[in-house]
Length: 362
Image (tube, rainbow, N blue to C red; front, top):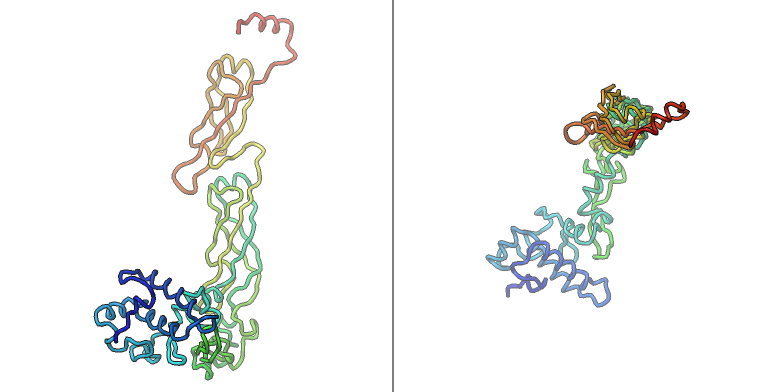
C-alpha cells in the first residue's frame, strides 16, 4: 500500500520546501529513539518521507507515481549510498547529512558531515588584522598615502606556501588517498553513524612531505615585518574605518588572506572645525566694518577667498561659502565653509569718540 508522505510529516500537498523541512525537524525531535517516549519506527518513517518530499525532483516523481516509482523507499536503489545521495545507511535507514546539518543547527559540523564546507572555509581563511593611522586635519580633507609597518603572517617565501622544503618530494597521502578524510563509525544522538573524519596522517591536506620547509616548519606561512601602503581617500573623517581586502594574514593554501581594517584618527585643527563635510570657523571684524560694510579675506582649506560683509551685519551672523568644504567620499561635490562673524566692541575710546557714538541714534 502506498504511503502518504504528506500525512506522515503532517503537511499539505501545497506545502513549501521550508514548511516540509520544519515539519520533519519537529517530527524528528518528537520521535527520536534516544529521547524519552521516542519511536524508532516513526523516526525512520519520517526520515523516509523527508528524503522524498525534501527533494524537489523526487517530490515531483512522488506526486506523479506515489511510492511505486523505482527507488522511492529510503534505502532503495535511487537513494542508496552508492548512488551519491550524500547520506549513509545505518540499521536499514538513511539520513541525508546535508539536510541534518541544516535542520539541527549545524550538528553536521560537529560530527564531521554536512554543512562542513563553510566551517572549513572559515578555518582556512587568514586572520583579519586591525591598525590605527593618525593623520592631520588637512590630510583628511585632501587624502594622503601612509605607510604601515606591522608584523603579520605572509606566504612563506622559501616554499611559496606549499609547505615542503625546496627539492623535497610531495606525495599523495596513502592513508586517505588524497581526500584528506577517512570514514569511521561514530555514535551520535541519531545512533551509530558513518562519518567523515580528518585524516590523522596528513591532517586533512591529502599530501605528505619527505621534508617540511625549514623556514616555516611546514605551515606554509611565516611571520614577518611588512610595509603596507594605505591610500586614505579625500574626505575621510575621524573614527572611520578603511577595509583593505587581502592585506590581513595569509590563509592556508588555496584559501584567501584575511583583511586589514585601518581605523582613522584625525588630529584637530587650530583654525577649523568640521561637521560631516562642512567646515566652520569664526572671523572677527570691527564695529565700523559691521556698521558700514566691507570686503574681508577668509582663510579656507582651499585657500583665501573674499567675503562681502553687508552694512549692518550683526554679531553671530553666519555666512556660507559654497563648495569650500570637504570633498564627499560617497556622492558628488563638496561641503560648504561657514563663517561666523564676531564683532569686536571698541574699548579705550577717546572723549570725542564716545561723544560721536552717543550721538548715533541706533
